[in-house]
Length: 428
Image (cartoon, rainbow, N blue to C red; front, side, top):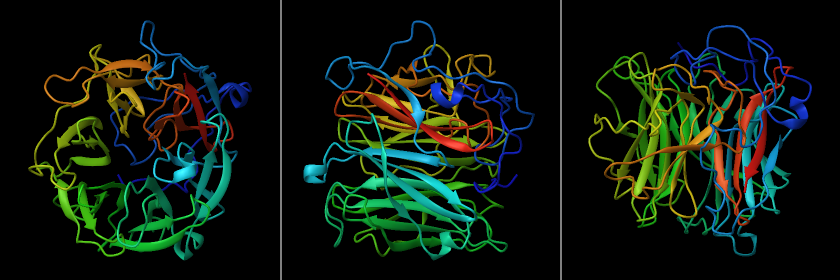
């Protein structure tokens, strides 16, 4: 099944109570089938839902309070980031921009008619409120070629002529053209997100296969590394994770596979790469397909350019209570070095959708992610009721620890009108 593009409307309006628009996101109950993440809405109809409640995780699970080292802060219930469509949320806390450090910058993919663009938001009060500050677009996105799967990144050091603190925004472009040839494009901002310029098109698809979900890191020698998901080798690999590198962010090496499994139906994707407390690197990713069911996995490395044999299978992520995160895993290293894992859906030991589906995140105190890694569940700052395999509800949630010690989350949920909107909230 081909991935459903993000400009396609929801197949049916998901009914919520009138209070959901004020109290927080909720979606109708949907089936928890295996599906293939990012490949279209799950089967079945919409159902009724009720508003999510911040911190409504499983009974007895530990909260995130105090992880930031500043003591317990007041929780902030979920609220809308914007009224319109907002997909693929990303949020970062600035750390290389001098006087602007500790500001939060967030981005979502949005649409105005057929045109796609990146909407950039800023918070100067540790995530209590956000203000729209800019738009990212070019001739292709304005022409309705399709926009998807963006990421937001702050350069921790200079790369070529781009100074430390430069912001990069990258996305998949071209999914909606009739004879599509997708590309991965990069825009840069050197004024703390106020203006953006396209600086590179790193890859063009040779056929109609997709190029999805870019992700950045900078190696110790200053090399900028880019990962994304490649569907263009469909006969041999339904999807694989590939890598490119650059010393100036303008010219790029040819893509090379990083995870390319022997099973041609396996679909490794959604890479998130973060630096661990000990200086090593971790990559979380999902593997979709009929045999892997969009489960979440983790791999570690001493160098973000070298990840070992491309066909290796990595440890499955599962909490000690049996909770298994599936679909769109996202990785965050918290202030104390513990590792936070978000995901769209959660399953139980019996393989069925968990009663806490969409209500929790996973955390490991194993800051090296080596040896036996214990994961525990805790409440999600923005719980979404009954997310299912669809591009909107709780799809690719994003997290950041604020300077005030809050754990802030931005994620998406549909309204009763069928608009996929981004919500943000935080736990102290």
